[in-house]
Length: 244
Image (cartoon, rainbow, N blue to C red; front, top):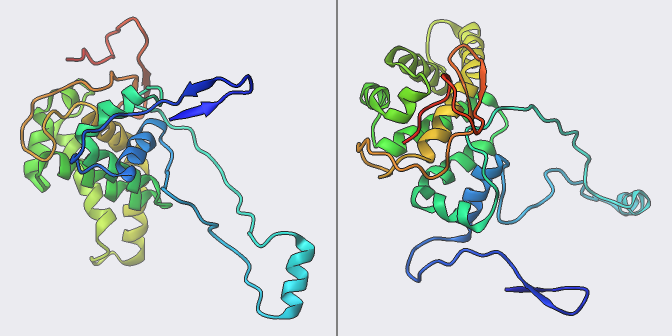
């Protein structure tokens, strides 16, 4: 594909070449871009809220306003990314072997509540290793990229328990327990997100218990267990993972 330039020349647009029969869809490419940018993206958009005229008077008033969409105030909260890659064909192509992970990750980003995001991010780990509960915790505790980020079996068990609280509203604690579980999920979300991103860019054989590693995108930063943010520069330091 080409874009016509003002001077009449044509500039080739960046593209990823995919063999026929790959089974990949536009959503899969969009999921990879969503992972790289950490922004929820969809194949088509629509106004989240829109005024609908129910009478001639409404039609007249909307015409005076000049729009039917309702303004929704947006906000942003900075958070450290585990990856720092340009959105170029090479980066998207590198992620395609783990397209299941990027699809689940993109789905999680579209959710509004932290507790829902936490639950969906944990699903990425379950998908990556095809394991659940204690088996998944044990596998992650042995997974080299997770160990390099300082994850221990105790911390991983705590993250799993927080996931359980985010998924179930059953218990004798009532509303107070639900609020406490939601708060725990919110506090641990950055650390879980760090792990999920690292697994997506290092898991060699997605959907299997295999612990082998393939570095798709180098680590750029991460959140430690105590909440400290670590940024990786060109010069390795003692806090930075060694890589593979």
